[in-house]
Amino acid sequence: MTDGAATTTDSHDDVPDDYGTLYVVGIGPGLPAHMTQRAKEVIQTADCVVASNLYQEFLRDDDTLPPEDSDDGPEVVRSSMGQQVELTREAFERVRAGEDVAHVSGGDPNVYGKSDLVFTMADADDATDVPIEIVPGVTAALGGAAMMGAPLSNDFCTISLSDKWRGWDEIEEKLRAAAISNFVIVLYNCWRNYTRAIDIVREERADDVPVGIFNDAGRGESGRNLDDETFSITTLGDAKSHDEDVGGMGTSILIGTHETEPWSNDYETYLVTPRGGRDVDDF
Image (cartoon, rainbow, N blue to C red; front, top):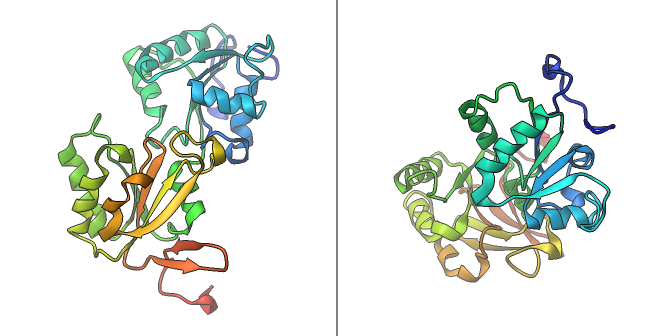
């Protein structure tokens, strides 16, 4: 193992001395101001970093990883959607050979990220001897909510619109249940079925409910969909007319409740969902 490698948790006390650790590392939106110190340390001290081209670019720009032509730092392996199983299997073998491996995930690994694959593969490949640590990161719902003010100050949920893993019937059932239950809803993977999802929620929620559409939260000018991180505020009834604001994989949509309200100061209009029926004197 590399000298100075990130230490493992107490639950790994029985790990063989010659093993490394497999870290699944959430880097949030990928820029340094929104990455935890723990994530940065794990990546910098790992023997091998598995990351997509986009995440490699982010990590090199802020010196978490050295320049591409440098001989310093960890070995960097490019990942892609079609290689996840093979790369995870390779990571198990590297850990058994004594390497610390940092498998990079955007956002948080537990929010539609890579962590479930690692545990599923460990079962399938009889790799339960491999120590695993999940390093959390800022997910899009939190980053986007921060851009828009305080829309998640009461109960909320996230729902992915991708039907790759779940059938649309199940997605529709979740959307309807969340709408009826008065959760603030944050939709992920909106490039697939967002207009369909809006129609379902409108059956259970008033058209004047505020909606926020945000792109590349926390990525500033490094976003992959638009020229900059953006958010726009509309209503549930008008949300389907905002195709130009739904840029792709970096887009999420936040659907408020009947309590969510626009709030403006001298500079911007935000969304606020109050925690409950209280005023300032109750705090």
